[in-house]
Length: 208
Image (cartoon, rainbow, N blue to C red; front, side, top):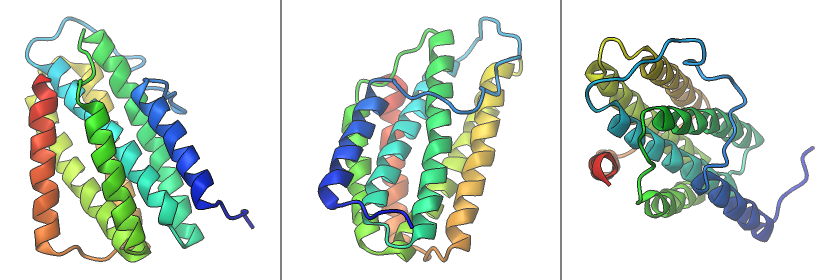
């Protein structure tokens, strides 16, 4: 059995994760889906879109970190660990692709990290069913958001398309896992608030 981790230890771990995420120190465990694809200068706004996706992955790291502090069931903790590891891959892939497109991370990433961490803690403190429901709804919204970005990409941008398509598939799997573990259906007002916050984040990260 895995030894229990105290609240102080959990907060120290969370602080370390925050520093690593915001410093760009995330290392992918899986190779980028774009690794063996050709690259070329891309028309359109691929760099800004990848900045938005990178900020989304910063938020995902914060969300899972906050949820993990209060997770009670070992199966839930394992699901959060698995999802967080794959989201770390996404974070590293997005940062690499941003660099290839001469784009920079959003200046507001620390702000969004703090807000997402707080939301993760709140959903985790509400109980595993609500935490998993929050996870499933978050992933469903991210999946729709990625579909929209795939439609906006230039047809020849194979590298960005490969990264976003793999991210979309992973998000779908994370959401399904949350529902399978008994995630509660969130009230409509909570879903609406999440969508509103997501819109604010995506629109500001596109430019700032």
